[in-house]
Length: 328
Ligand code: UD1
Image (cartoon, rainbow, N blue to C red):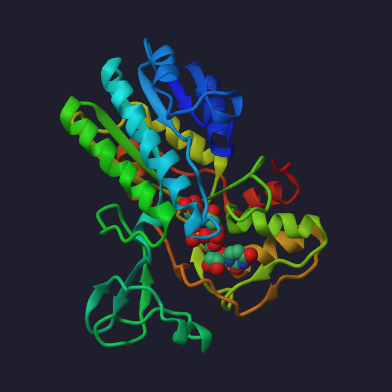
């Protein structure tokens, strides 16, 4: 197929472009770093004719610094996607694979012994400062047991980035309804691997720990280190994009969790990386960030059943490579 990859010079986009080419697809690359902006309808008008699928990875990512980042997130992620979808409609491109994120869920799913499945709101500063990190039942305050979240869970975006990722899904769903196009949203969990960008305010925890270790500093593990994430290898994420090319249904957006299915605590990830690099040992600081969620653990089943995608890189194997792999 002829595939336009936006964000093709980025961490995930670069791996996606390589995986597509390795499977014999023709890749057209678009990236701000190589001078073409997804918000530029003229550039899109030049690149889109003859394209079968757009794989949209271009985005401003991460948590950002503060609300001053909001216009940048909205411009690149929301406006950029809107320009892209309008151009796809104009040039008759009927398939979209969208890089979405698990951050749209907010806090993960939990079971209360009395109230069953619940979705707790943000944790209070008071609880967090007392070291009470586990969310409580929103109805009775009881302790909860974390459960795997599936794609039908309600969205609860907690920051500007998450809000723009959800907006992208909604725009893509409207585009699909109005044009009969097929949209697939891949909700990436915590992606890591070779060429991950170094430590910046926009980096995920794996890059932050890896950069600290490389500089001889101890990884600083927030809360008590018991918060869980699903670390999924970037080559698996690239394979998921290839699997998604023929997925979905016309006239609608179908969303999939892209996860390893092997959740880990942030503390364990820090210890594993530190051990693989020969130290220094992580420090558990008890610090917290108000916007953070405690556990976000996904069910990868829908992607397995409908796209035939399963992650192949195990946590131990992936971290072993990541411990010494080049960062960008
Ligand atoms: C991350 C990304 C988000 C992406 C999502 C899925 C960032 C900032 N967040 O969300 O954009 O959509 O994965 O791929 O890129 N932590 C530490 N020490 C640190 C930094 C963080 O212990 O130095 C902890 C945090 O408190 C949190 C966990 O690590 O509990 C994960 O943090 P992070 O990777 O920043 O954010 P996610 O919420 O997982």
